[in-house]
Image (cartoon, rainbow, N blue to C red):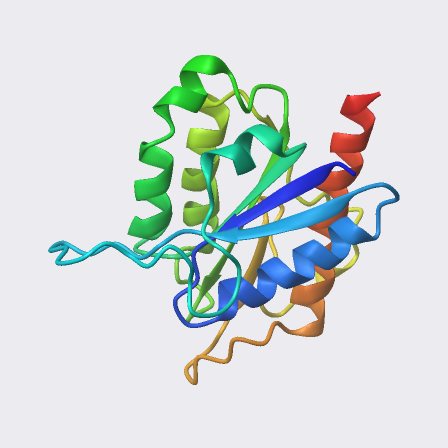
Length: 197
């Protein structure tokens, strides 16, 4: 069964919960399933390598995940309008996949979470798209035919799914945020299915 790779970094759980909603949306498309993966944390000073398997949640991504996926969704919390360092570090190491065209023609989208409403969600989503364009992915967002995009009071943008965790750092997406995350997952899965035929 073709799989859509949902690859993310999540520090406090918000992005991980969005990833699970996206995976639900992927699973709503006949013949498609989600492969949840994360990236290891990075630090300015490394004293020991990250363990080969995270203590909980999704397993760490491997290069084979990129080659085997039919589509890709990238998720990261916002760091000053950009993706977090662990995801950027992983992407910076995908030169081999870029050179060989591993992701060329595969549909891709992005998702993020911020603490505040104006915390840089759209800038982060746009900057996350840049490496995907270099890889030759077919970029897709969330169209305004999704009614929740016009009614959400939290996250959700045409550039990708998002979540506003608020001052108490609530990782649980609102109903509109969850609906839009599932819509993004469905959209990428539907495109992957159409491109495969």
